[in-house]
Image (cartoon, rainbow, N blue to C red; front, side, top):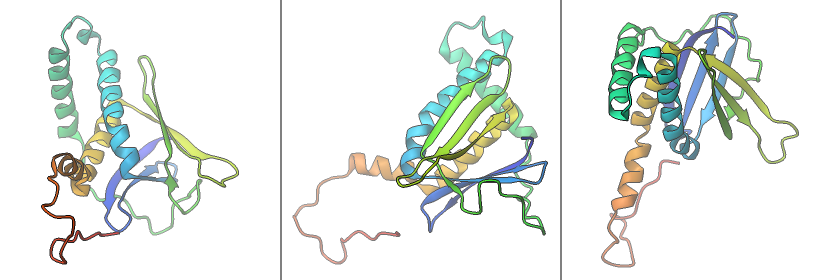
Length: 191
């Protein structure tokens, strides 16, 4: 699968992130990332990307401390992102793309990240839902520039979703002064 374009966008009505992967062959893979999965995946993905990129570069092996490796990683990431095209809109073809997984996006229940020595980072997206006869899924291989691009797009979608802020607010929330909420105090839910 040769990736042509990536998109990650927070869809407020679904309260999910829609990731779309467009290939040069004219196919498109679509996945939903839920809040629970994304927030659990984020630290693992960040660490896997950091370690994978560090292993790719021979000159990072002589660096012994994590701070130096992190600084070099951030520098490389910024260099890659400067050359990336985040301004071209995701291509909506006049003819619908081939959808090998069907028109409904994959509701991701499992993500597997596999670094390949001196190669791409493999990411498998799988869906195994109750009552579903067989699992649906696919795997992508991302070279370092695409890895950085995907992480950047996911960061932007996370920022737009405000999921991290909600978690921070829940962790620091104060208990209400009374056991009852007035109509003014009552929380409002989007979904």
